[in-house]
Amino acid sequence: MMKYSFLIYHKEYIPFLEKLQELGVLHIIEKKKDIDENIKLSLHQISELNKALKFLKNKNQEEFAEKSEMDGLELVEKIKNLSDEITAIEQEQLSLNKEIQKAEPWGDFTPEMHEKFAKHHIKLRFFVCNEKKFNPEWKDKYPLDIVSIRYGHAYIVAFQRGANPIDIDAEEIKLPEQTLSELLAKDEAGKNRLEEIEIIFDEYAIKYQDILKDTRKKLQEETDFDLAINHTEKQAEEKVMFLEGWIPQEQKEDLEKFLEEQNVYFISAQPEREDKVPIKLKNNKFSRLFEPIGDLFSLPDYNELDLTPFFAPFFMLFFGFCVGDTGYGLFILIATLIFRRKASKQLKPILTLASYLGVATILMGLVSGTFFGIELVKMETYPLKQIILEPLKLFWLSIAIGGLQIFYGMCIKAANQIKLGGLKYGLSTIGWIFLILTFGTFMGLEQAGVNIESFAIVKKIGLGLSFATILLFANPEKNMIISIFSGLYDVYNMLTGVFGDLLSYIRLFALGISSAILGLVFNQIAAQVLGGSFLSYIPFIIILVIGHGLNIFLASLGAIVHPLRLTFVEFYKNAGFVGGGKQYKPFSK
Image (spheres, rainbow, N blue to C red):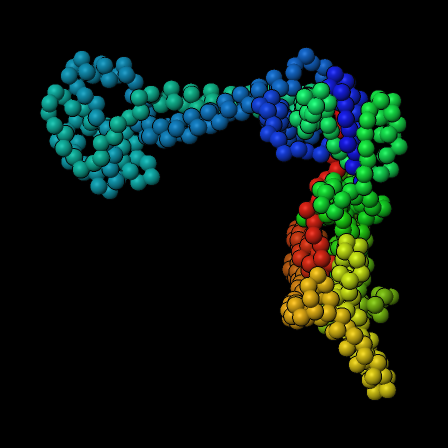
């Protein structure tokens, strides 16, 4: 990135910004200023447009744009009003349902009926009691009867003449003010209106999503323009405008050619260590697929290495290890290749990534020896038995892969430290690398049967130099005594931390084994329903499809979550990842 600073005469500033926005290369440096109410309103409107688009996209995926004079913000307001109406109707229906449940046992007792009885000085009263508690003698004593019996309760209507009391062991009920017919009619009207609104939403989703997108685009450009003005410093009694921003180095010539045409005074500079430089990742075609995974955690700091190409192969391997079934891998690969043909431009990279993960699953399935839960090692005609590893070897393989990634991360950390501060800042980590290499080399020679006694002096020198480097350069900014104590503390943290990190990689083995076992179990359950008749194949196929479908889903979910943890916790920690970068967003149309 290159930093550019501009000085523009105030009368020429707005035309300059308009052309700069068309060029679309400058990431404007935000000044610590409060934004005005107009910008806040625009940002709120953009947020509402995004919500409306998301809402309509969930309603209908197919779009058939229709020319319309309707404004996007007007459409948003209509959607909000209709949504508010839905909420109001649903709340009213909750209340109506309670009233209907209250009135249903009694049927329709209209106000006219009450008035007719009132003319004869008769008052209608309503009671409810447990069906078993109803006393038939009440009928002889008072003018009353049971209207209905529901769910073990008796609903009683009584006719009280004048002031004659009615004294029965039942709870008196007050009926709703509206009759049952009126309540049911209101409920039906509410349901019909909800259906009408859903039809309107479906129509909006089909016809007007483009209008919302165009409105959002226009509003975003206007808001970006207002924000650019907001981040401009006024100098020389507001006669000169001062603006700063960042551009990728490869676009330097385009920007400077534009600035010369505009006759604008500018200066350019390389980033300083304390600058908050925006991040634009540069990866090859393969590593670029894994950028969304890294973005889930954080973009790297400008001064450190981007770890995306370094964790990408491991993530593939981890996914394959966790699913660990050749058949599942084939299913993932074929499904993603088919869906990719009709997928949107935004979704295609994700499906391509999934295809790579499917390939990794196929390869690891060959190593673990499973195909849709079938143990390939038990098949006499299977030609690749020699590459199948038994469970114990898979266990040690998961730990070995973890150790390799941790060691790899430490090498990256050393390179990063040297890049940021110089050689002395990376020497302590280099000491750890040489210590691991020394131990690993001599352990390997011993396992191979080589007599290492003649190399004892070399081993001692290697270990001594490694420990000396670790202790003396643990804190290069401080004196030797402080550095040694810092080194001893690092030794304690490293020994305990690396052991814990290595154990974390056992989850790869555990998930792969559990997936294989679950697939085998579904096969066994399906085999039990398979009989002599042709019809027995129907439940057999249903069990296999549902069982393996569920297993693929669960295994894939675990194969995403746990490799994410191994990447963001174990690998990032040992690689010394700092993060906190802010994405490069050019001021553009």
